[in-house]
View 1: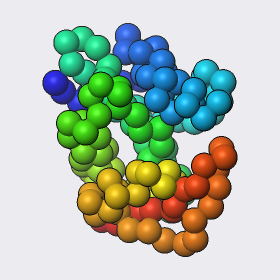
View 2 (view 1 turned 120 degrees about the vertical axis):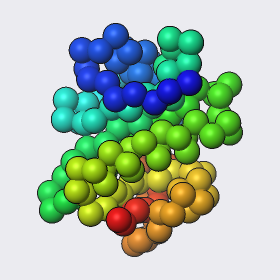
View 3 (view 1 turned 30 degrees about the vertical axis):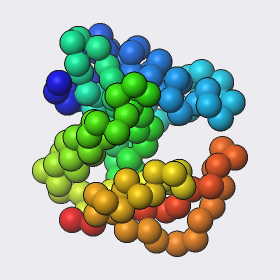
View 4 (view 1 turned 180 degrees about the vertical axis):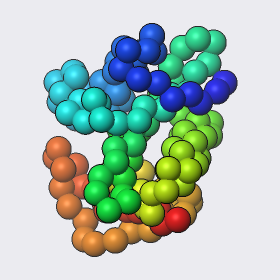
Length: 141
């Protein structure tokens, strides 16, 4: 297994899109490919195993040295095996090398413990996004 950075013209991009649909969108009733508005400006990281995408995460750079982690997904049969942690570590390493000061995310309530274990902090009140309770979280370098 390895984490690699890809672009939208990479052979793995379509697999990444399908994984995001399966894990993130369909379970909450959003249409396939319905949350790709930042794909063209994001850095895409995917976990590859046996030439197949089994995990992904996006990093979208914002203003003032900040970036947003978005669309983290791990294939259901591979969840709880450390893949999300490896993706997150790769993304944070990239963010630090590109001189970002922090990375924030809108974490679904069930993902908050994962981010807390990986040194993200909760900031601000919980909120609802796409019909699900989320928390504002960030990692500061």
